Length: 106
Image (cartoon, rainbow, N blue to C red; front, top):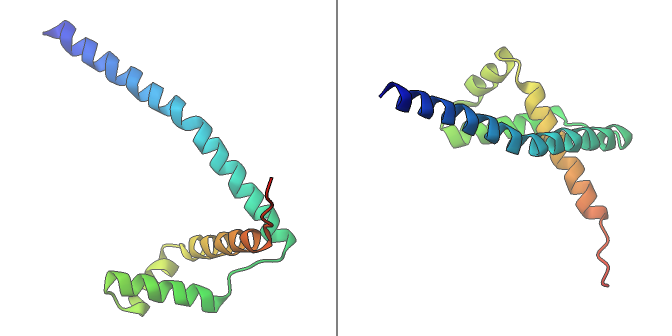
């Protein structure tokens, strides 16, 4: 019984290490993508406006069936407004890239 328990514990550690190794390339790509989008946003002077942030919070409040002011207070108190701004900024950069993309046939 003891050996079987040790075997399962070792197998779990191995599986966890394997999962981490499998996720490393994806995580590295996410970091690269983040910096690329940030660089483009800076170069194009793309920002999230207060109105866009408020609209996003209203949408979140609506989906959660909560009061807008409660939800906004939560984001402010938790210091999460920048997370919303970053997401909006990222979406605007992606939209810019898609709008400027040219489709060519080979």
